[in-house]
Image 1 (cartoon, helix red, strand yellow):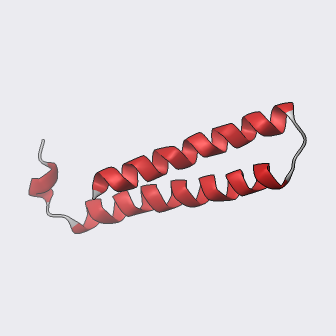
Image 2 (tube, rainbow, N blue to C red):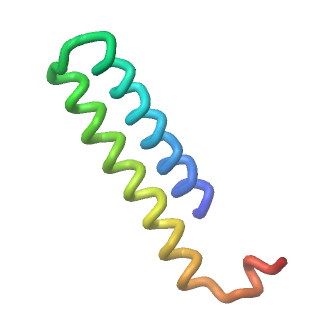
Length: 64
């Protein structure tokens, strides 16, 4: 489950980077705005899900 959240969070960051590239080289349009919204949503969802899983799991699952 943590892999799903990790991939979602990283995909969100990649989408935000793609939107920044589009904004730098093109004008702001509906597609860029949609990419930004989707990227921020995925990044927050992914990293918040990882944080919740880490808090709720027993320490033995993340042993050093």
